[in-house]
Length: 71
Image (cartoon, rainbow, N blue to C red; front, side, top):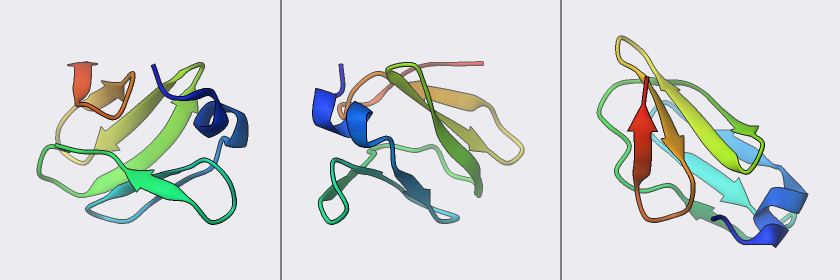
């Protein structure tokens, strides 16, 4: 599970190749092991982060270790 301060902040910033999860306005961590492809979107869905990759799947992260599943 993501630490509560990241969930409470709710801020996610993504580029074509990375996703940053914020715990406040200045401190953030990147998500690891995002499959190759341009990132189209990244958003909170409850306590999970969903990352949509062009031409691929949506990857679901439950913590900072790795994505848990995809659809």
